[in-house]
Picture 1 (cartoon, helix red, strand yellow):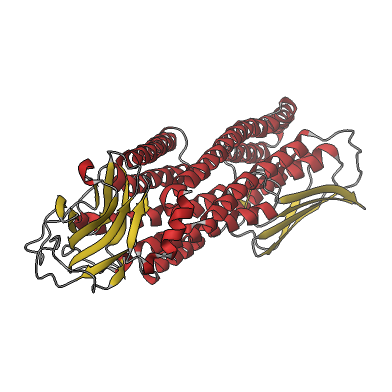
Picture 2 (cartoon, rainbow, N blue to C red; picture 1 turned 45 degrees about the vertical axis):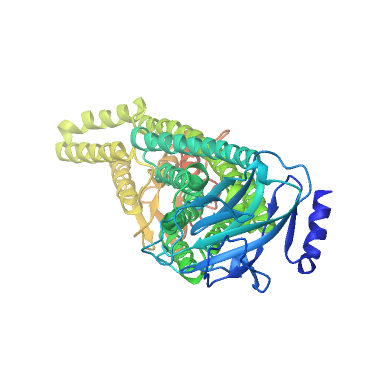
Length: 557
């Protein structure tokens, strides 16, 4: 009923000398008659305004002293708390039927004579003045304390029950304070996690994102929660844009780290520059925030969609929540920068938090697996039969061939030293791996009184691999097969962009069929999974008089 009435009233505004009716609910006033050159008191009863032009309040600009008037028709049902709610970048003096009912700041003719008023002003209308019939609402304003040129100084003028305003402010404040508190707790928790548990950059990024988002919400809601004089509005808007920029930058940065995207520095720099450019290209502060939010959501959604294409399960919930945020944003960009931003941001952070907890769980499991693999690496090379055979050779040679015994012990000690140094590493240089393999072939040459060599084809420079996986392949060749005397092992290295292929050919005299996968094969596979997830392939098979081991590693992110 009320909406239909308001629609009719808006249709007949030009015919009713801009009179506005009130039925006890909020009514928005968007146009008033204007007189910029006031020669007498703005609220004077005898002041004739019939020839004043009707202006859109949103077109009002700063550095002026203005007198505004409109007619308000009261029919019935107004409460005792009916008030004038004015949001304005200026000082104001409000009259009801030529009676001064309130003053916000001091209206002046210039900056020296004006005292800034509150940006939001709620003024109760004396109940005895709320009689049925037509009334005149007069607002005298001045705005001389803004350091930047604003597109408008007017934010809203309405006649509304004060209880509705307070209820809205309380509800909005409660939601904001809960979100701010939760974000600050998350920020502190992940700071502690970073400094006391595990210094992963993703924890730091998430912590700073939560902190900047909390500060953004606080600055956004400062006006509703605490209020301030209008001359501080530009300072607050600057801080809103600063925290908006930081939050919008850190949102995609988080996912770049979460999915281990390659060339992170390049992508972060590009996103930072793109968002920064938008700040300078867009004029109004509200449009700046809208553009930053939309760009950030789109970029972050693209990152997640890319990972979704690569079948990353964690990308599903993140992609869905981001796409939902984009839909909410498109449906009402202006509302999004107000209250909907809080809900959307909180939902995104919640999903990010769940993703981080899953990541922490996986890291913990990987750490335990890594410790187990390190122990297994040492255990495989410190087996009793290996050491016993080696010591028996030393005993045998120590009298007959003391020089060979000394050389053998030195080679054995060097191999064990390298294995110990490798045991707590997740990846080693391929050049170091080759040195370990050469040392092992030297030991096996002593043991079998043969000559074993390793022919390396291709450049091992700048390639990192899990420790001792080529070494294990050579070990397996001796443990499970018969290697001919004077054999040459061939390691072929090929690299294309970020992809690496390693092929080891071990010459055999006789192949032995294995009934199950050996410890060495399990070790190689576990190490590859630990380092590359699903971004690798490993094959080990006989071919004529050779055993072929091929590892293909896709470009790591």
